[in-house]
Length: 179
Image 1 (cartoon, one colour):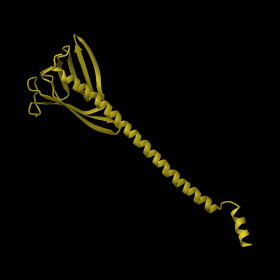
Image 2 (spheres, rainbow, N blue to C red; image 1 turned 135 degrees about the vertical axis):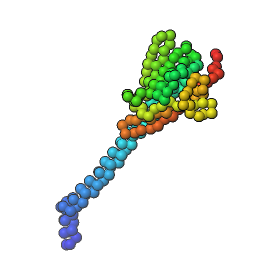
Image 3 (cartoon, rainbow, N blue to C red; image 1 turned 90 degrees about the horizontal axis):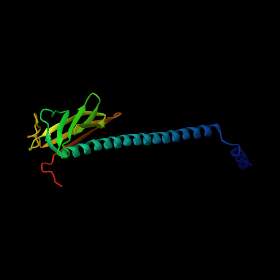
Image 4 (tube, helix red, strand yellow; image 1 turned 90 degrees about the vertical axis):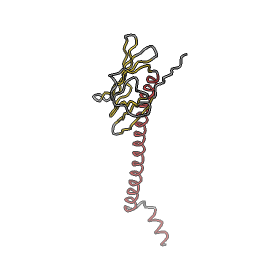
């Protein structure tokens, strides 16, 4: 008879205590799943930000290296930590690189036969500078065409709260290939 009474009790449903315990357990599990999903999404956003920064920096660095490798002479008097002017042996083009703190960009312009085209190599740049090196890899305080053997471009990119530093060093080719 006692067994019938126990079976009848179990068929009536859940008790209030069991329902509360189930809801507490479900809320704990769901909050943990929500936190994991949020963490995954935040990691994805951070990773995408870093990938975008690296792509932007690679574009600026690649163009800088390509243009400097074609240099035939540097323009004395216009070589500062934020400006670089040189002439390329290709089409006698004159390039001007400028790091602008006011709008956080690295800009360049190219003049060929009086026609000037301009562009932005990188946006969101802080602490950018050109460092001119001599043949002993020492920093030049007053760089000239005759003394420059290498140029270092250093800049920080910032996207939101993320900031990364990039440095590129180029030694211009003195003996250009004649094709």
